[in-house]
Length: 103
Image 1 (cartoon, rainbow, N blue to C red):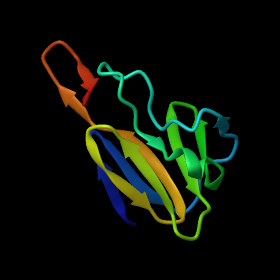
Image 2 (image 1 turned 30 degrees about the vertical axis):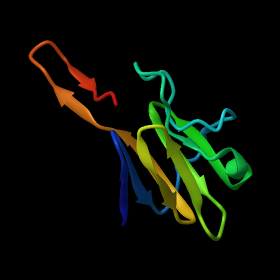
Image 3 (image 1 turned 45 degrees about the vertical axis):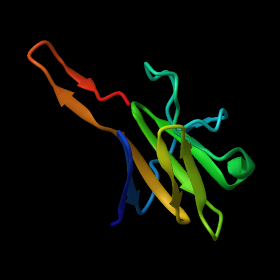
């Protein structure tokens, strides 16, 4: 299993994606961060990747032999090789709540 990170987002390689996932058409990996910046598949490569919502979990299937580029305004571009990935947001603890980390 390989793990890749871009800022507050972790891409964890998985053998398979759970069945019954709903396809997210936007091509964005994460949306609605406080800063307005998003982690997304490079526009030219949208056809090479499928983003699936499986309940509360998010998965990315990369079909391109050379992989796809994940871009974000504040981070270096990350190239994910072909395969399946679970997408995990980094979380932090505070006495009030456990919350997602925001770039």
